[in-house]
Image (cartoon, rainbow, N blue to C red; front, side, top):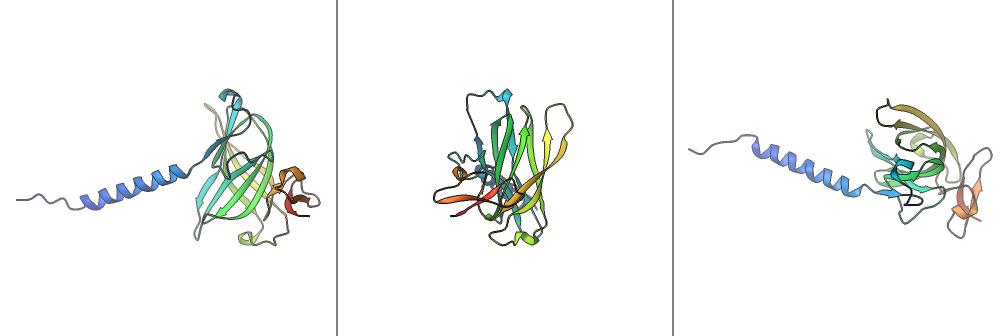
Length: 190
């Protein structure tokens, strides 16, 4: 008599599907190194973006540039950078489509990991005018070995355009247009 394994095939199919999705997600994760690659790991830090499933959409936060330098990568999920003060430009994606850019500055310490956790703002679904800059708060979990995780919040500036501090941060022929009271501006036509 043949042995019957009820539920075996569906469970295998579920495990296989889960493994395939994990491989796809791992293949899409981009980690980049910023600055001099000769800087030892002990003097570097890591900044990690996020992916959240919301009720109606997926939201991702990726690193687009560090200190205005884009490197050879359009977007990275995580970046290794030398410790010190840096400003990061982030891309906010909704269902894989970029809907906004944000920038913030922070002093990053060696040996720590900075995990971006949330982006809070007062814009309804980020439906803002293309020319307007707005304030946001980036929540970050800071972790290091053998110490409890710290939760910090950093002020950020967001808008529809690429973020900048000076004209050289923008692709030609765009220039950096700052808003009153904002430490960052947007790259816009002259």
